[in-house]
Length: 262
Image (cartoon, rainbow, N blue to C red; front, top):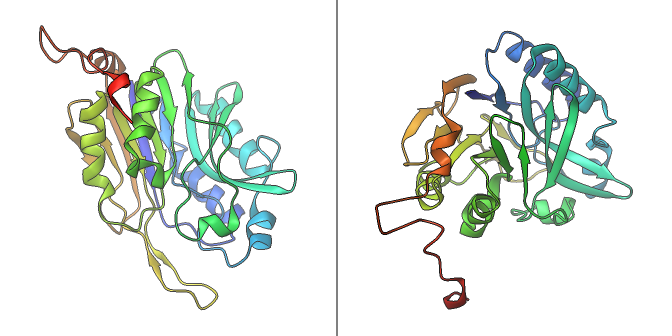
């Protein structure tokens, strides 16, 4: 299975420009699955709840959703995209999965980071795994990574590949995902963005890039730079993530003793 990510520097509030950049960037991509950054079409540093709501869109009825669905149909591929989702009067920080037949499902971010708590509602979907035939995809968004329960829950639900749209500003995540993969024997595709945002008199947020694809044994298969756009595509075997046997005596998930945990 050929999987990938597309790291770039979105322009705040320029949805059409950001979506067009992705559509052009992926036009020739030879991949079955590609992950995009968190809030890839809107940018990140909102200044009010009203601004976030205005820039958000309904999924799958919005223009961003329709553009991604068309690309997936034309390229016979799957895309996981981080987007601001409008649901009635609420706004969520979400990850949406699209495929050749259109929108497949949406996950709403469980663990909101920093000022996201001012603009977005806490996610209400719970973690989700989607079977696309060649692999089972688990979705999470950015700051979910710091909670071990996020990847463990997805692994217990059968995920082979963790699709992880991100807007990382903390430096720890790229290295930490090595251990999340080791802990759960899963692949992870963390797609971050680059650049910075400094809006409304707020402190500058500098995004660290370093998007990566990590194997179930913790090997970094590819990692992008901190500052440059990057389309990374690698070949993986999702079935490797289904072997949780560490040796003849130990099974990574089978040896769990939930009754002993808080």
